[in-house]
Image (cartoon, rainbow, N blue to C red; front, side, top):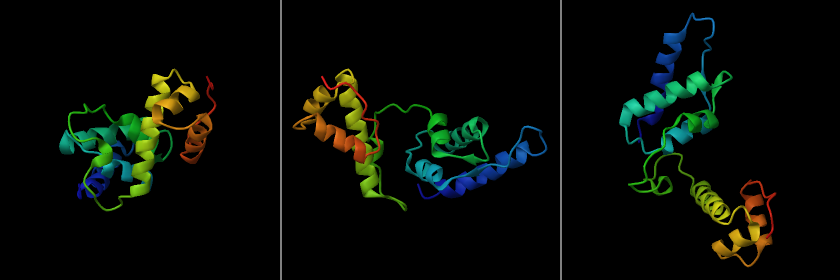
Length: 150
C-alpha cells in the first residue's frame, strides 16, 4: 500500500522516458485524484498490474495529465472474492466521508438498476420514505437524478 505513490512516479518516469522523441509522445503527469485512486486500489496482480494499468492510462489519456477517469478506464475488472474496495485498510490520504459517499453511490446505482431506473421503486429498495429523499441524496452525491418517478 505505502509504495504505490513511489512506484507510480517511478513507472510514469520510465514510461515518459520510453516514449521520448516520438512525435505522438507527451510528457505525462498524474493528477492527485488519479494517484489517490491508485493508492486506494487492492492491486491483486501486484506491481505488474499497477504498471500495466498506468501504461494503459498514459496511452489512452488525451491531455498531458493522467486523470482519475483515465485510471478508472485503464483498470481491469477485479473479481469480488475478497473484501470490497471500500473496506480496505486505512492508509495515508484515507477520507471516511468520501468512502461513505462511494458506498452510497454504489448502492443507489444498484437500486436504480434493479428498479429499471425508476426513482420511486429505487427509493423503496433503499428504505427511503419517497422519491424526493432519493433525489436529495443523489443531488448531494453529485449524481444525475433525471429519471422516471414511477
